[in-house]
Length: 300
Image (cartoon, rainbow, N blue to C red; front, side):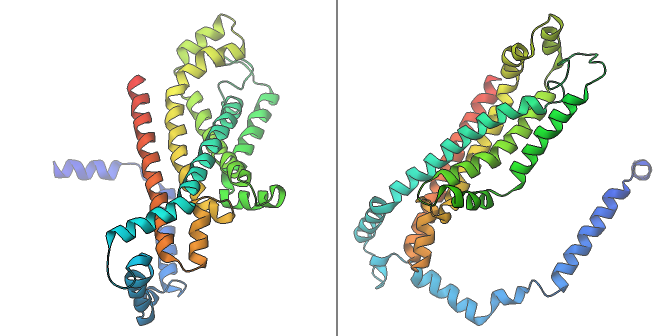
């Protein structure tokens, strides 16, 4: 058995590209450690250990307990006051930004995905023998895919920063549009791949009876692709919730805004409370998303 396994291992195809990639990765890792750019010892200097002890024992301790006495009624009252003053409104703003952004991203992706799918954006959709394809359709797919690549390649934070110059810092639209553009490109690419991987039989039947492209899309592609697409949609919704918190640091009055504000004022106890609140809503969003995906998988 051992000899047979060795024989199969020697007969297995070997990829020179994979080997070269692994050697290149090993060389880059060694360079990062040996070049001096990353100094692991800097994490464990006496000054940093002192800062860590102060942060854990003083800075993040709730204000009513700074004297060393933990009166839980006072701490709960402090938490309630912070949440009433800023926390609940910031949480609602974070959720609102993420919901509006993912809805816009979903609409954008459903406009782009059919134009990027090679089996739909062609002269004869889903035809077993499409014949010679026109250059117009290839150019259309190339342009649409290029738009999606650009929209998902630029980080949301950069897009939001650029939109601040146009829309101003006193509204949530820079964050909403930044999330919508980035996630629209991702969902568009995933939607196009979903359409390309659909079972072609029913769609070819629609094409064979002379159904127009929009009828094939509405009565064939959309129902067949909906289950898989919703899985991607809810996954990106989880991401939108997390990113909406971070984008608040640009000036949108969400959790990220108050995290940055508390950090600037060195109110680390309040900052930790807002971070915990952000983690809580992300966990709730993950739970809702997981339940929705499970329901979709069960229904499909």
